[in-house]
Image (tube, protein in one colour):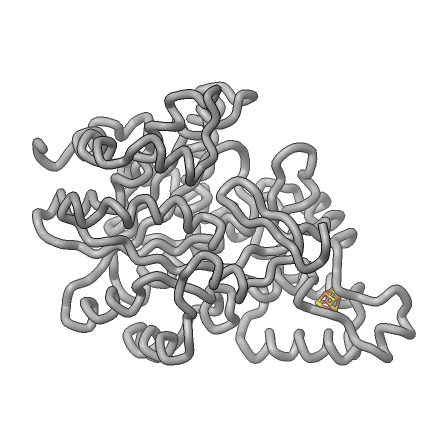
Amino acid sequence: MPAEEFVVTPYEVKGRIDYARLREMFGTQDLDAALLDRLRAVAGGELSPLLARGVYYSHRDLGAVLDLFEKGSPFFLYSGRGPSGPLHTSHLVPFELCRWLQARLGVPMYIQITDDEKYWARNGLSREETARWGMENLYDLLALGFDPKRTHVFFDSRSIAALYPLAIRVARKIPYSTVKAVFGFEPSTNIGLVFYTALQTVPCFWPSWAEGRTVPCLIPCGIDQDPHFRVTRDIAEGLGYPKPALLHSQMLPGLLGESAMSTTGDRADNALFLNDPPKVVERKVRQAFTGGRTTVEEQRRLGAVPEVCSVWALWRTRFARSDEEFAQVTRDCRSGAMLCGECKSKVLERIHPFYAAHAVARERTKEWAESTIVTTAPKPL
Ligand code: SF4
C-alpha cells in the first residue's frame, strides 16, 4: 500500500492515517480551539489530557450538546465494549474520557457490553467465553473510577428485557440495504449481526425513553467507529429522539508499528493487555516500535519522530503526568536529547505502578459491578 493510502472502517484500519483527510472523508467537524475552550469552561477550567494533547480531534454536534448543557440540560455518555478477550490500554481511551467527563460534569454513563455481538462476529468464541470476558472487561472499565451511582450497564445477554422494547421500534426503521452498505454484510452473514445494529442503537435513546423527556447523548469513540453511529443518527429524529453527538479520537499506534493497537489474529505483542504480567509488559515495551533512528549518532543529530512512535502514544494518552511533562518528552524526543532506551525505561516506571494500582481498583469493583447492570425496562413501550 503506498504511504499516502490508508483504510479506516469499523473492521479494518490499515496504512499511515492522514487524520485531517479522514475527517474530511467522513464529513465530521474539527474539534477546534473554540470548542475546547467551551469544554474547559464547563469542566471548571481544565481539560482532560486526551483533549489537551489532541488525541480527540473531531466531533459531530458537540456544540449543540454543550449549548443544552449550559442551559441546564445535561447529556449522558455512552460507550461500549465487545468482549472477545482482555482489554488493552487503547481500549481505555474512550472510557477514560467518559470517566473524566462524568467526574467533571456529574453526568450519567451508560456502558454496553456486547457479549451477543462478539459471539455472532467471532466463530472461534463460545457463549461462555464472551459472557466471561464481558464481566472481566466490565471490572477493568469500572476500575477507571466511574461513579457507581451514575453508571449503568447494558450487558446485552442479561439486559435484553430492558433493551428489547426499544429495539423493536429501532429495528423497523433500519432497512437491510443500509446495514449491508455500512457494514459490508455478505449473504453468509448470520442474522444475529444484522439485528445487532438495532441493539447497539438502543442505548443512545434509552434514557430519553426511561425519563420521558429529551436527554442528549454524547459518544466518545475512535473515529473508525463513526459509521456505526451514522446509522443511528439517520433514524433518531424519525423515532422522536435527538441525534447522538460524537467525539472522535485518533487510533493509538500498535507496539509492532501498526497504525492501530489491534490484536486480532496472532498479534498479542501489538498491545499492552491489562492482564499482562510485569515481565511481559517489560518485554513488549522494550521491543516496541519507535520513531527512533538507526544509530545513536543519527538520533542525537537528527532527533526522532514521535508521531509514528508507539511509546510516545503511551506518554500522550496516559503516562505523562502533566501537559508540561508531555511537551518535554516530545521536545526531548524531537531534538535527540533523549534516546529511545531511556525513554522506554522512563515510561515503564509509570506503567508498572499503574498496573499495580489498577489491579487493586479492579478487585474493589467486584463488590458493586453487578448493581450497575440494567435488567428491566423502565416502562412498556
Ligand atoms: S525517544 Fe521515546 S518518544 Fe521518541 S521515538 Fe524514541 S521511544 Fe519514541
